Image 1: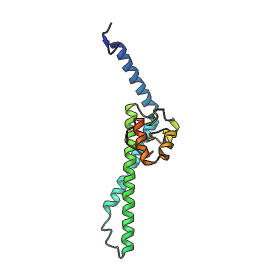
Image 2: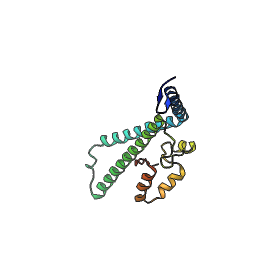
Image 3: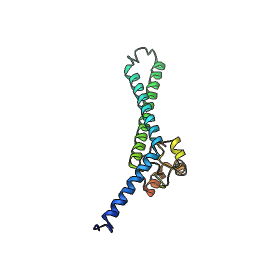
Image 4: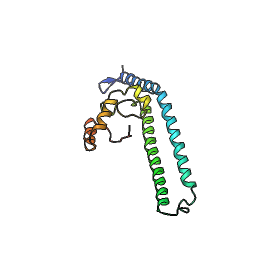
Length: 163
């Protein structure tokens, strides 16, 4: 008979660890389709970002042909739109990477606010969702200054991924 370890035998502790590992592996397999979808989204975002950056870098002197303030404003607006696209891609990539990490850690599909499982249909539609529909609706209708208090009271980390 093994010696006691935190109120359990070593064998019981080992069995519990095996059960936890098995559950984590089962969750990973359950979300394999979503994982592949996230990897595809990541590849698309990286390709689009690379194309956008290549376009920016390959522009000759874009201000050279500008003849008046209207032309300069047009060029400036395009620059802002490109920057906004790259910023959006960066945020989406971060959300995808965090979702892939949650799958790997076995905590994917759990609402960050209430701790309940997020329905698989929602995850298929929005694979980087952090919250169930009810909590997401509450989150979106809550004033910005109240969100931090709400998240803190539920023990959720503060990072938002725009889901």
